[in-house]
Length: 624
Image 1: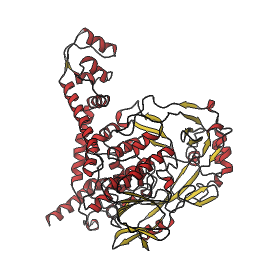
Image 2 (image 1 turned 30 degrees about the vertical axis):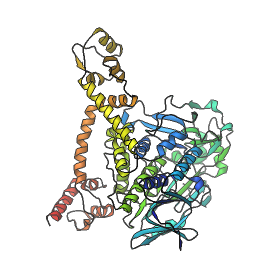
Image 3 (image 1 turned 180 degrees about the horizontal axis):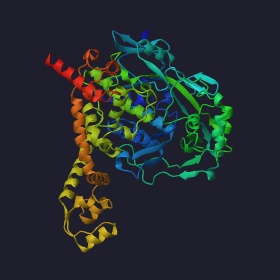
Image 4 (image 1 turned 90 degrees about the vertical axis):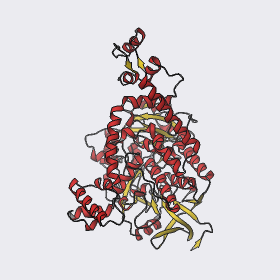
């Protein structure tokens, strides 16, 4: 093996959403970092929906941004439609989503990588990992050329033994038109990593001029965009509409009558499909009472005529995809530019990972993104940042970075993966987070930027701005709690006009703001501050006041949770020696190797009685 003369601290394999964030995090922490991509023209590629965010996914993007990551900035710079979801619900579940120009997103992210100090980009297909004495020491590409590194992050996406399926056609590829990483998959299996197969897919793209938009429902972008990045100030691109249509009984019948030609149902595909983003074949079979399904037509960019047809993911042969698409009202003359396809690929059971996303089998080897069984650009980016930070800390000899379930959606996702594992593509939801009221999109920087600053991921100016915003919120909160509003003709007229009761005696301003009919406008009207309050400060104050009781309750729950997390389980603890547990529970504990009683409590099947037995053995060990 011929090796590169330069030696790297961290090597990142893959330049998708996970790989980009991993490499940037490592380099920004001052470590010499290499990112290897099969094709540098596909950096931060959007192979499926050209969009970022959505329910809970938007929370992850905000957290990545608060931690100094790049996805939020690139999303805002390439957004052609901004939407805030769940606006009629509480702030905990409101999420941002953008439709993006995928080429501008790619170019934006690649430019950031190329300009980043300490970061080197190279094109190459990694064939195998080099491991010496249980420690990863580098990688070798398909030409036999080697790169030495002290830690390696694998962010291979769908490329490990990837197989693309279009009807009876089966092609070895990581994405349509790109090589699969077969050698790397074999290398990882030889290390003893337990791997499985998963399946995902993408719908057809159609030419925008062949659609009859009069039969579709048009949806415009929000008038006031809500940015992902706390540093963004404006939307640089024109805002374009999306369109909603519906499939018909004919659409469904084409699928049902041709299941024998679908690799998903004829037995060709072995990988497990995504439950939360099903193919149309799955929809037709699993929802037999549903004649019609929603279709979302979205532009792929401002300089292309390709349109993404969300909701039509399938693996049918091309000769069937044509009538399948044309059976939808408005799509009668649709020309398919790119057919839909399914792809199956290898993934690693994530219970083999430490909470830092380092493998237990090989020291210094970290995994991030779809290789851990997740789906989605946002889940990948968050894991990439997490793994990149921890790879850097490993090289620096510092303790791992781990957020718990009360600190962020990133912590929820990683804990879910390493504690429970996954047998199907994992997707983040707000319902997965027990403390979601405390982990809103709008307060991600208050939760995480100080941590990012301590890690060296954000500048002093950034953290100073966060501190100033927090101080402004605290100041205004204190002011409205002290302020008393006395009854008067104008005050009561204002209250009655807004559908709430008049005052008979003086009332504290925060108590008035708690009323359902009142917003922060009531503060500026009834007891205005000396100087105008920033819009974001006003929003935070309103949330803190209105949800104060719920917030205090959740803080008490978090304190109990953290108590369990503080009871640590040593790395060399032998779960097989714990008597009083069933063989099944012992096996689960030995597989996951929880680092705390809190993590142990979240393993499927672990009972309060089992935790008591585990606590007794821990105390005995401490006594000895």
